[in-house]
Image (cartoon, rainbow, N blue to C red; front, side, top):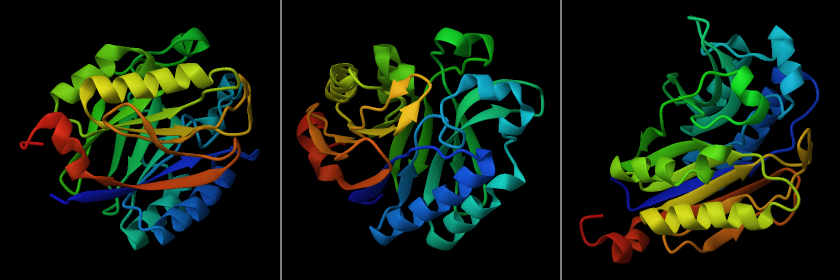
Length: 252
């Protein structure tokens, strides 16, 4: 178990050109995170396509868990030792369709964490998940959440009961949702005595222009560091286990 965990939250403006073009840009951004010492890199919701649900009528915008189009991302994870969490619409072998965070490990393993609390048009496209997935890295437990999951207190609460140290949210928050964003991340972290991470989709989306503000929250519910703008930006922070001690006691 390590005393610190260095994490990069990538605020990302998705490119036109589909999964291949965005995968190459993900590689560049993971390399940037590696230069800052990151062990874990979190990308936003649907980072490999952008949040544009009508695109999903075309099968080319769906990802398979072992999809060859992610080979360049897998390779940078192998070379750097970084675990990357990327956002995609995943079509599983059994036909189940998930709005997912795809976890790419340095050893080549791939895990799928699904959005639990679908809303709007998502409900007609995807099958919901069953709660926060827990990623374990260097002795830290990181709960993975996707956008509206963070609006439901029980989602983070259940993750905390599983021992989560960090609540990592891949999302799309747009202009005029700044207060909503702050309340979600602040409340989830403060109520459950854990760190919070937000990777927000940047630029223009089908839901409106991004409000930016990707970054990190402490277990006191206060923001530690956030993106300066609303376009692509890598925000890195060193999370210290000792920061959790006053909130959790010596057993943390």
